Length: 262
Image (cartoon, rainbow, N blue to C red; front, side, top):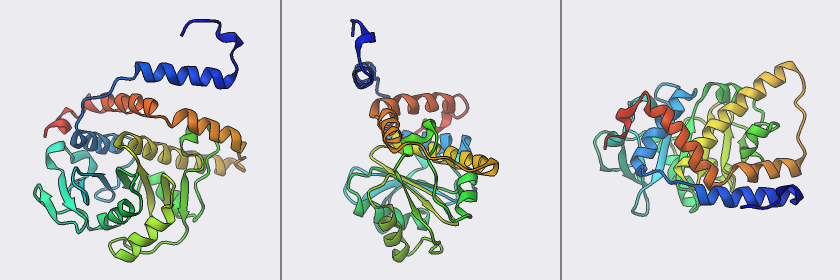
């Protein structure tokens, strides 16, 4: 990594940074259950508190299975030991209690998207407020570009998402994107890892809050598409996701060490 960096162009410097980050990356030793529990606590501490609404799921080891939280527990009560393993019909395979019946639409997304390993759905307050306006999420700030060209929009509310019709509609609206804004409802994030899903859910709520603040003051100006894509690719990398998740995990564990108990 030595040498005169002042002779390198921007793309070379970016690639140099990616290579260095990859060599320095340190994986956490959290299990999938612990990552889910940490994600619940992280989200709760960062504005994703809406009582018992919202779900997080992650694929299980066996095909057609996923881990999720018990119905009746808030995100601030989730620990690795009280998660459920369920099948696509929401039948409990491991654990006690019942899952949220709205998890049915998660199964539809998993069926449509083999690349997705974790789904987060919340009614975070700024996202929910934005959804009431029936307008898409606007990505117009560098910090939010992790979501640039990644957010689909479902402009009409289909009602309580516990039926197969809603599952098919939501999976179709998401398409190949990583995120979805559901009008009069909330957000959906579907990514290849638990860490990435957690970070995009945090970014989504922050972007919604910024959009409401900016639009109250004036007209939001778009960023150049090429620069938006550049920033997206700069931020959305496994190395950065691992490091950022580890940071939020450290913050959360200062207050919620119990969430790791399996």
